[in-house]
Length: 181
Image (cartoon, rainbow, N blue to C red; front, side, top):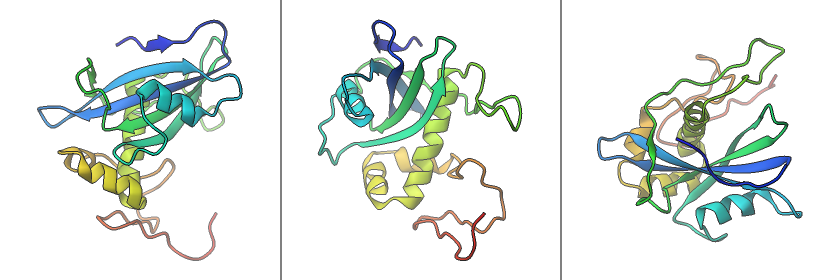
């Protein structure tokens, strides 16, 4: 899928919005839109504009999920949106859950992540928010089939290891008290 671009010139920062929907077979599909960040605008405002969302919508969840540097020098700020505000437009099924990784501990940025990898990372954010953010959970639970789809995705944040004291359940995550490292 090509990125639907509204990007012109040599913008240094680009906002990318991934609009997710539940498919008829119980999976996920997404659309990718991009626009320049300029003129002192806030990235949230650009993402909402790309998606056609109002600032005060309660029917859609918009969440910043990642950033990446492209070989051209651009920085891309990625947002996830659910449900897709325009579900009649073509979308790409998200069949691959593979996440992008850097080359090593001191090289965290993947060389060229595929849009599917960026989308899979964004879905993990949505799965995490379902457990930790009451407002996000309310939107997610209002979308038919979305809670079931997200239940099959890991809600564990980046760097989280099994057995570290964090728990995922239908209620908000419990963060253990005590010193944090």
